[in-house]
Image (cartoon, rainbow, N blue to C red):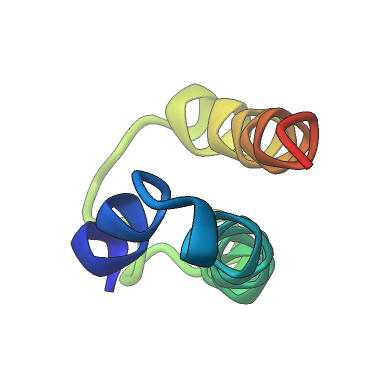
Length: 69
C-alpha cells in the first residue's frame, strides 16, 4: 500500500487523495506503536527508547504529509 500511495504522489490527479490516505495509514498504525510500547512480547526486544521515539516520529510524518496539501 505504501508503494502504491507513493506512486500516487507522482500524478496530479491522484496526489491529494494519496496524501490523505498516507495520513490515514499513519493514524491507523499509531495503536500498533502504543501496543509495542506496552507489550513486552510485541516489542520484539527493541529498546524502550526506540519505541518511544517512534510515536513523535509518526506524528512528524503525518504533519509532513499534511504540509503538502
